[in-house]
Image 1: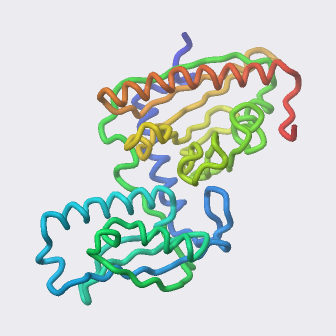
Image 2: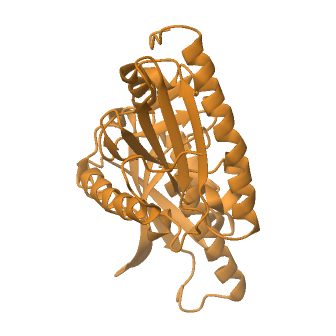
Image 3: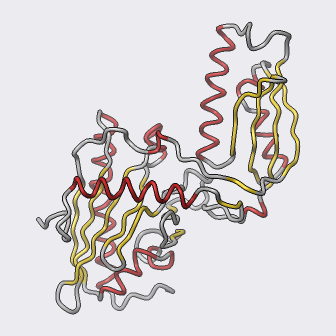
Length: 305
């Protein structure tokens, strides 16, 4: 087995590098003018709504009942899921006067009302709501501290494949939308820049947030040597879906007509569910690399096919 780092890096160095690059990505993504959704659609087509959640009785929330506390817990997780789907930009309480504030980003007023009519506190009669059309012209991205495992384990998935192709072609295959579509999935969005999207869509017609690696970003790269990006769990893994791991790819020429591609997947948590996710990706990455090798063996790589 080859060493994980061909540049003399240790795993400790790698973790530090990813932490630094992750911070850079967060800064570069932030302070962004809303112009294009990082998934698929143009933000100019998105409709924004300012929602006021209004209490239905005097004295609320100071006199909240235990049943209402449960409703408000469901309310929190409902909005949290919508944040992941990029349907909610912002949510929180306003204190004077007292009301709940939600900023929605949706395709239509109907979608906005469907979201609010199914919001747990509205359904339970704790709140009513008022919907106000608006335009979010400027937006700063927020990276949750829950995005990564706070104390990752030492587990690493390591895979390696040697492919019959030149370095330029291999690099383009992993760092462009057209390239990854030749072997990874039929739909993708990849932009080679710090903080750029590395999104592979496995189920195109699923709701945004359930298609594949939405909201995963490029953490760093060394041209034609190394590519690091975030990765996420399939939706079937529940809460782990929102916690991002990190993948590092290394590219090393082997002679004049072959390239060794080394994959390292790190950032794993601990516990039974994390072990299941690790086993899942241990198999999945073997399949992806085998598919990539097969693609290279069929002839010169052509990203427009």
